[in-house]
Image (cartoon, rainbow, N blue to C red; front, side):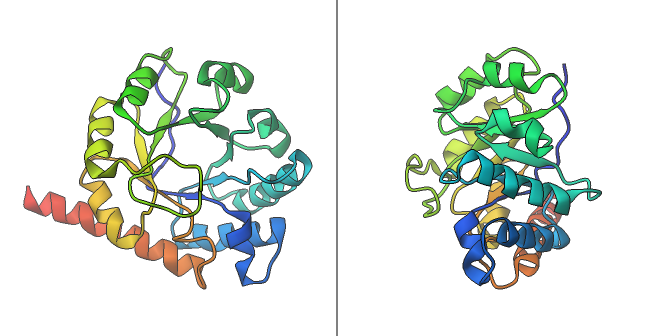
Length: 228
């Protein structure tokens, strides 16, 4: 079974606290950030809030789903696979310490998107050994040091990202310390896109922040084609 299509070019992972830095709170702040970010070129959105109770998480997720309705931008739920249906999301994303991908796929059914975080080549090898159609894409990182996820693994750098991209049978999106400047370096590895948190969440103008990353990504692609 072929992976379910998703445009990973600019993948926003929300942070409720950062989204509220402009004065909005909870679901309102996240939804406002997502609305602006999509206008700036975000192609996929993952709602993440490890501190929220399930009911609050559902409220945030539904607010984001309402913003994304009709845009064609998919909504992914971080970790809480059991809430995908309640939120009306397009899929889920699980980490190495979360629900097993095979179990997550069983809950989601055949049509929803499923992403998996990997940090090492060994993780990528294990992902490649999963049943066909289980996982649609890998989130690879952190690539650089980052401050939004305190318990994240140490950064692997561009060399680890490149090795994982070459090994993975499904598209990879890089995450961890990525900004507009670094997005160009990520594209050179063959990754399908970049995932960001603080580069958009909490920024004074999320739309402009997203646009800068998209422009950098596009310019890197033009440069590589020109060099050929």
